[in-house]
Amino acid sequence: MCGIVGYIGSNTAVSVLIDGLKNLEYRGYDSAGIAMNNDSKINVYRAEGKLSNLCNVLSSSSFDEYTKGIGHIRWATHGAATLDNAHPHKSNDGSVVLVHNGIIENFKELKSELTEKGYNFFSQTDTEAAANYIDYCYKSSVSLEEGVIKAVNGLKGAFAFCIMSENEPDKIIAVRKNAPLIVGLGENENFIASDIPAIIGKVSKIIYLDDGDIATVTKDNIKVKDFAGNVVNKKVETIAFEAEAISKRGYKHFMLKEISEQSDIIRNTLAERLTGTNLPINLAGVKVEEILSKTKRIEIIACGTSLHAAMVAKNIIEAFAGIPVSIEAASEYIYRKNITDAETLVIGISQSGETADTITAIKQAKDKNSHIMVVTNREDSSIVRYADSLLPLRAGIEVSVAATKSYTAQLVSLYLFALKLAEAKKTVDNIDLRKFKQELLEIPAKLEQILSGSKSIKEIADKYYKIKDFFYIARGANVATAMEGALKLKEISYINANGYPAGELKHGPIALLDENVVVMSVLMPNSSTYDKIISNCEEAKARKAKLIAVTSSNDEYLNVLFDEIIKIPEISEELSPILANIPLQLMAYYISDNLGREIDQPRNLAKSVTVE
Ligand code: M6R
Image: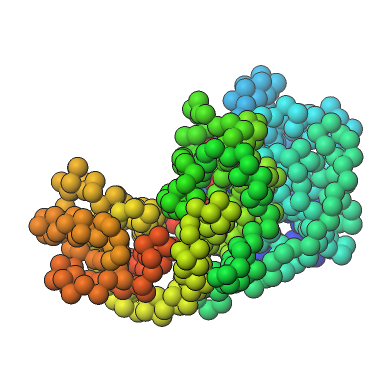
């Protein structure tokens, strides 16, 4: 949510900044801006909307002499997506220029304090209050660094800043508190970014700033202090991703690329962890014995798609390991009195590891001495620092805002965990344990089979893409599949789509059904509720809804009942959510593509939601 990039060196800054922002565009696209410094002045260029608009603004000028700069891509929080609210923001006299990711919670107080001191405000943002406040503190300090240290102690909330001043043109100051920021180390040049994709391919060595770090970055030096002004020694690490990870590799959209690579991703997720049906599951990083020695119940906390993975996890952990599991949206968990305690295993699931709600919830649980297990795709993310146990997804960088490969990797990882608990507790007999392991090992091949049939899924999407209402129904663990299918469709196509437990249809939503509605149902033939869901589909058919099935069933009657059938390979009901979701991802993709949507960057959304 919002992206930041900074460059200081001997090369032209503009291309580094624009390249960096391009790779961060998935974090926000309400406006974009850069500020560049040529040692005598700082010029700011901004544009509403996508980065391409900023590129148009910049296209007629040459910026060869500007070798330092900061850039920003905005997802609007305080203040509409207008030019006035676009970053970078300047202090009144222009001596401080900054970009910001996060929210300054006490900006109203600061604004009124600063107004009394004669400062004027030209935007509705919290960020402008920070720019003027830093300027105010700087004016009574011997250096920009000292001014920033004074100012950050008076700011409340979450902030990652890149700050420049015309008075000290040889440096950029980077600050991190509850919003990620890294410094990339080059030869005679250094970089700052809110996430690795911004600097991937440009440097291989980075420093992860921690909360409370202030880095003064020059072209040949990086000095880090804490908010009290004490020097902090930082570890230099190597970037774990190749530039290839953020290329579309010829696909029209990142989403399609990410859907298509899922069988390889799952091979990676399973590698070394599950190597044979007679061998124990090996989850290095997960302290299974410690967990089992003290866990009476499990709480899983997540948001969005990760919450759907949590729904599946509840089903399988209870079924395989017999441990009670509750799940909750992080944004709800953090504002209610809960019963989390030292005997609760708290699992935080977050693809990005930067979701503010999930991090806050995990921090709260940590304070209650719960064992914290983090399931994330980003081992370098903020949530990891609270983890007692860590289960990385190994899905590679996910660029598309719509989560696809990370969801499948979350499911497979959580199945491994549930089966590991069952193995340790002996709650599933050996024959079944071997069967489930065998099924997991077969997942990549079955994913390939589904993906190779994507043409027929596209044909169905071509037929129905103009429909304005979709219902997704299922039972058991696939209720999560229905909800995830609906979320995927609505977020990228803007079509009204809702997921329900199939049995709930008759308790209200059925009132909406008519010939203009599509009902997508997931039904597994070996399920105890197969006949029930058939009845639910009959009820929908009686209201003239169009029916599409995702199933592995060969039941002839389905050809009579359904308008379309999408076949998936046979799989046990327990593991079916892994496969059943893939056609729904493809349906959402093809429908949205037919509608000409901006699939990788859907309106109003951002990849990681770093504000509560
Ligand atoms: O990074 P996280 O898994 O914590 O993100 C949670 C949600 O914001 C995310 O899943 C969101 O719902 C996606 N856009 C879904 O495609």
